[in-house]
Image (tube, rainbow, N blue to C red; front, side, top):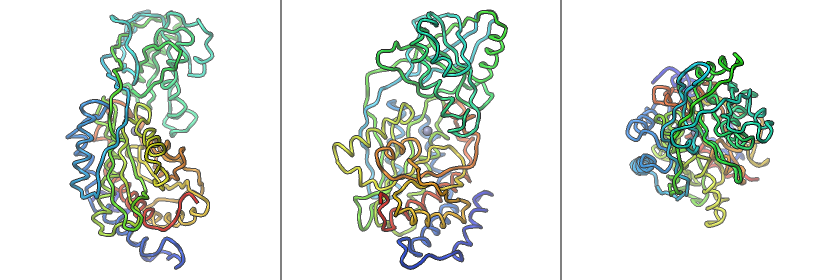
Length: 470
Ligand SMILES: [Zn+2]
């Protein structure tokens, strides 16, 4: 066992002597003791490491709709079947199929430089042979939005805003900086630009540009969109500062095909008393194609599958079912999650049977807090679960507004109660969506710790007799 996991295990051993809960609580001492045993079982196991190693080595990338995506699904179905899940199945999701092609960019004047660039997901190609145009520079997305119609005719818009590793919602964090990637092409096209390049949405200083999804809007001309690496953006910014006109040659062959069908993959531990109702723990199985999707979201996949396996091996079935949900096509825009909501609300009319959900799509960070988003009467019971996590170094936040991470937010926004687990700061955004998202970046003791927390959480949440909506 590695060092961090051992520390947590040492702490966990003190749990039995911790405060006990009143007899009339829904969360009985039996449930808490078994959860703690599952946590210890997980910390003593190498399974989480084994699963992510298998996925990244045997499958590789899992770009939605590709042959590798199918390989990933077949891997997940076989793995969960071998693990002894009671039921393993797929649910169809129609997605746009995007092909990355090649991308190159070169400063041609006033100096000459090749730049490291990648196409943003969903981008169209440049005209055949590429395009060469003057750069129109903007400090940030909102400045581009303010550009008058026609002011960028025939130019390549460029946004130089640099994200900082200040958390997803920080003022310069991923969410804010990411507007340039998600919506920059629409703003640039409205002002007349023929293409857009952005500084990568990433916190590193490597020549590994960051991909990620971008959007087009109905009625607005589609233009090609790419991201250059941070060092290339630094260089471009210095050239722009010289005040001389800067021209760039851009050549991209990315393109979309007709929609295809992929699948969400589900595995279930069937509950003993109320099997229709299920607690869902999830991650997304798809990844970008530049690397092996180890951090994004191989860690989540391995945490959920191994957490469930520890519950299976722990020998006590939950009262309600536990479903491991491996979402399809998260990267292109939460397609699997949105289709799950649609299909289970409209076709199956059983959406409310998914009683509580939690996702992991945060890379390798060790879980340090637990944030509920449940009804006001069930909140006390959920907070009591926090007492079981406390010896593992996980504190319970006193908020009650969690909607679920990534895919699970689509379910949370559709009315499913949700839990968010928060993590220690990491260098996730150095590697996110780059050719550097590989297995060596994964902190194995941290994801083993996280699997322990998810195993404890899923068992308790599915077994305690409480309605999380109330
Ligand atoms: Zn992800």
